[in-house]
Image (cartoon, rainbow, N blue to C red; front, side, top):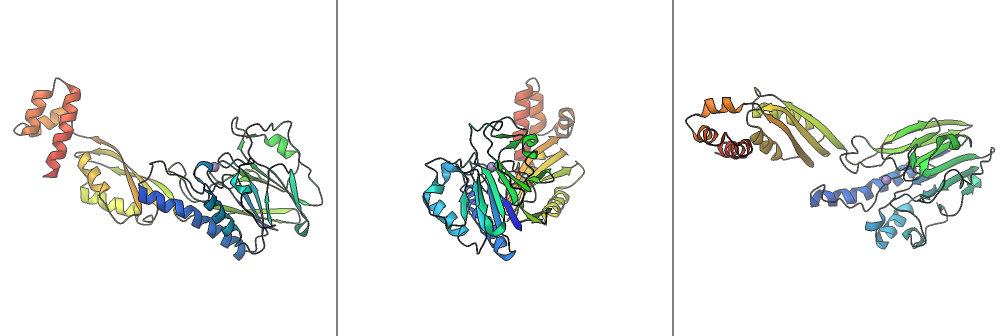
Amino acid sequence: MKILHTGDLHLGRFYKGELPQNISSIRREELWVSFKNTIEYVNDNNIDVLLICGDIYEREYFTFSDMLRFRDILNKLNSAYTFIIGGNHDYIDENSLLYKVDFNEKVYIFNKDAFFDIDELNLRVHGISWNRQFDFNTDLNFKVEDEKTNILMLHGSVGGRDYFPIDMKVIDEYKFDYVALGHIHLEQKIEDNCYYCGSPEGLSFSELGDRGFLVVEIENGERKVDFISNSIRKYNEIILEVSEDITVEKVLEEFNNLLSSKKEDLNRVIVRGKYTNPNYLIEVLKNQRGFFYVEIVDELKLTISIEELYEKNRENIIGKYIAGAKADTRLLNIGLKALLEAKNEN
Ligand SMILES: [Mn+2]
């Protein structure tokens, strides 16, 4: 039996000013495209079961027509069974949009049911939708059956204290063939039979690198878990180190080298080191074109000391300004910054 484990899709995500408008619109749509690609993967690779472990969508930004779209995409599945639990962003109650549309008979949504059986696959899938009131120590209702393949779906944090804490000591007693987790957006193995799938697309600069989903093969009690990279773009954080003896031209060469394989990604370049004209360099880097998205974080320091600057500029406006403002450090820094920038513009 082949299982695809995904979750934390965050369809409809609203990018709260963290990206420019045009980029966030593209990303919002790409979350949908990424999900469509996942469905295509299920069809092309004879996956029997699709598990979606919560946070499919963000309740406050998801409309009825979004839910119809979600249904239409899910309906493209050729034969796989789908199991859905709610997460903290799309918690399930009687008003949940998941209940306002009709899914086909191969889609199972966990609300009150403790498990569903699929006789054709000799499979029992347990699941608990995210619930703030759920008491992990007393409310568990698992009925593992040894003759079947037993799977559990949860949305919460292993060892955590808020947001549905999951106690692995309790889970381990049930001997599940596989425990599919959602909520933590970084793909990771918790135990041999228990994984977080991670978010299928990075959602911010705190979700760097490769993203995708997990494919789990369970055959005769043997289990194989593979991460499949599937994201449309990645978030990257890149450090660009400079020193005062490097020309702007050489910095640009380095910048382009670092980004050459990442042109279509979302990149954050942190510029570090000491430089004679830091503000000028940052402006030049900010104006580079030909990338999907690059943001520059300025961690440069001015190398030159005030004394040195004064010695080199005695005869011009910079030197005269230093002489006049040196008693007030704050004023000195503000004025110097403006003067050095103005000088570079000419
Ligand atoms: Mn999430």
